[in-house]
Image 1 (spheres, one colour):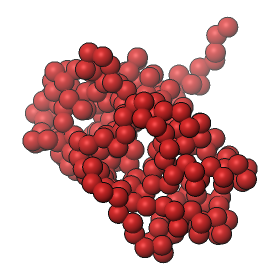
Image 2: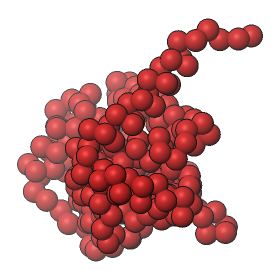
Image 3: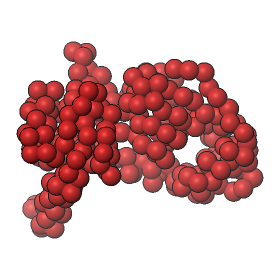
Length: 242
């Protein structure tokens, strides 16, 4: 991890203004927060933080991709989320001050904006609308985690993999991710992930390259993922049983 870099005040303010998470703040609050914010560059494969580290900062992804995961004693990892440009992370520890609940690793070279807890918490305490923003964000996180657990429990390899590829790159093209990392994201071994990728490569849906995957047939991958969502919506429309 390299040293933090501080952009100009106007640049930091424009970043805050462009992000919906901070839209509830008054102009004077934004000015104050921008004066404290800084940027941080994290190289691919480096930790932004580890599980158990002190939770004193909130981060906004400006460029790149951050993987949030929980390590197991045997070396495996449960991937909880992928944070892309515009996403906010570190909000749980920011509020309660407890240690980090997961690892955060840069999957590609990544730039983030950093806001320290000591600077942001007074705004949360004084501005109910800011607290509601955080509650909304936490609810979104919970829904996404519930969906991921459902996918791992009920979907087949093909369905899980199609959804993961779209999460990583909604517009297709090159995705910088190893097959091991992709398997961790969908709860499968590297061997099972590779087997499905090889099938799709023969079907010319994608091309496997060193250190990544290049999606060639985005429409077919989208169709595979959308069929999953249609099945999910159908289940939700069914009456609940006592």
